Length: 277
Image (cartoon, rainbow, N blue to C red):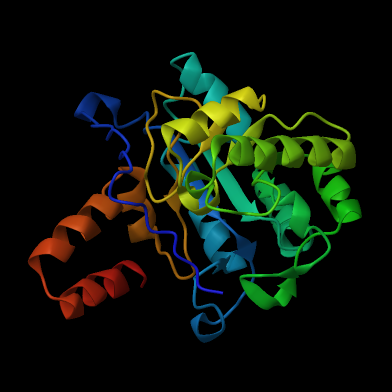
């Protein structure tokens, strides 16, 4: 299965938060997008979906050193609505591979931070389509994840590009996932992540009608002024603290886009490799 998480040209980019010297003690709001947690070599992980446990631990500790309070995505979105998002960050994980329970939860407990996992309700108990050697949480494990204090969000029922669907079909994906996940975990599911980070005005409207309070994109797309179109920064396999800092300031994606138009691919790869060290 080919994975293409690149935003489309018409996607709107997030508004950058400029930090003045007086505001450096209060970093900008930040949502990070992960998938799995495991020491998986890149040759086995072509889409960069798995973060090593020690790397995630270092990233969490760096967030704290910058002055962040790590909260669930739902709380971050609520604070954004109230104008109190500065200084808060959310760790989010898409798709729901089984390591989100067995590897992620112990790490969260050891670091004293929460997280949000966006589940594809129709994938529960199956092999991971993006990494056939891994599996997705079972419904029972999803309940355990919720009981462990992890916020459960929706990543739709079958993981389609919602922007390619008619409004009614996109709405059905979001409604079905919300209903099924709430029945499984026995708690409200109020937040969502759009598959591939893609959302149009119709997609956002469908998400609103489905009853979600907040939703997010990926690759820095979206805006902090719309609770159902919030930006997240992708955290890929091998992402370093330098990359995290660029993403914190919403500089990584613009840097890659601007360089792509002015420099040859070999140089672009070198820049990416430097950020991954």
